[in-house]
Every structure is written in C-alpha cells, then in structure tokens.
Image (cartoon, rainbow, N blue to C red; front, side, top):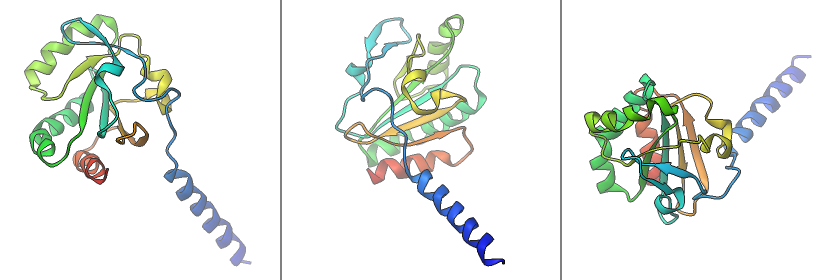
Length: 170
C-alpha cells in the first residue's frame, strides 16, 4: 500500500522539476519596442539600447524598494570586475509612478550606479514580461540571441553571484 503514494510523490516531484526548467518567454520579441525615459527626461526606443549579440540583464526597481537598493549596491560593488570577466549589458529600469520620476536621477547619482538607468513611464514591460513584474526587484537575463533564459524576483545577499554565474555561462 505504501508503494503507490511513493510513486505519486515521485511523479509529482519530477513534474515540478521539469516545469521549473521551462522558462516562460515575453509576449513580444527582444529588444521589444518600449519607450524608455532617461533621467534627463529624454526618451528613446528600447531597440536602441537593447541589442542581441551579448547577454543582457534587465533589472526592474522602484525608488521606494529597499531590496532593490540592496541588490543594486551589490551590482555596483561587483560591476567593474564583472565587466572585465564578461561582455554583457545591465540596465536598471524603474517602474516608479510619474510623481516619483524626479527621484530617479538623484538616487542613481548618489548611489553611483555604473550601469544605465531608465524609466518605463508607461509600465509597458509589465505586459511584456512573464509574471507581469508583480513584486520587485525582478531581474531578467537574456542570452546573446535575445531569448529569456533566467529570471528572479526578490533579493537576498549573494543572489548577485548566481546572476553573474549565469551570465558567464552564456
């Protein structure tokens, strides 16, 4: 009698593992067509800053998100070394509401973030990326061809190491 529940448990665990290996893809092709706003208020199309050919990290954040600040502090600490070891792009994209846009540039400057910072005014990425960017920070890693290969939500110390290991593996 115990054999059958064990078989079902094994089958259930196996199906969870297989499911976890499949990566949901965006609803539009990389490099998308999203208007991004620079901290100086100028706008550009995401196709101008996102290009295939090297791994690309899109890190979504808010000015009020404490875990986002911790994650970006870890990126800032490691960024120069990472760039010496791997050729990749990392973009920080704020999803703040318009009344907080004026806080983006001062925050990026004060924290000395070495990577480009943009604002998704229309929150267009919420409709494009798997999970709808529900909960921040969220990070999406695209391979050299623009295929989404990894994502994570939330941050705890050390997660930046996993991200960089995945970048290096590409």
